[in-house]
Image (cartoon, rainbow, N blue to C red; front, side, top):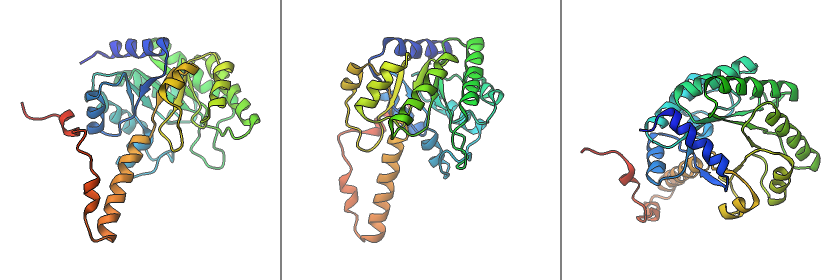
Length: 277
């Protein structure tokens, strides 16, 4: 197995090379083993995917720091690939909370992590800019002290429906870069023009979320545009859980079992799982 330092070095090199490397998101040990077997460049945890395995919804503060890091440790043990941690808002409002989370991520062996500016409070969903920046600054100072190769991604979660909202997102992302973020991520950005605007306005590697409905830009197109990293977020978990639910509804309400004829034999997922010697 790779050491944590080697994984961090490899992960940082992917960001320096650019060209839209793929970073899919497993949601448990089995899905991590499958992605490892398919030999992606890197993988990442999914806060939503993990939350669903625990029977709770995402982004409501129902998953603790300790639980998220324990889940990350399970994923790390299942693969030799670099693993990025989806660590939500850092599991606390203060810069000190975020610093503690980043310290824990490094100790766990993650190669990087993302920190959101989403508060989990529907009444006040986003941290004020000054507080959001201080949180990223604390994260950057921690990782620079403990593991400089650790890749810190700062996320701006706000909407981008209008030009004003997009400009506010750009303002936040640039402030995060100035505070020490290595990579930036605005999950609400979806179309080509918005992506090009971000690439021109923000001087940092950019992560784009592709695991969503109606996203039809290809990896090559994203790479040609200058996107550094393409993540899938909860996309694979959502596909798996939706297929499970649809099949369960089919056998309950339909009274027949033809839904299992839809299973493809093209890929044998069990070949990626551990077996007896």
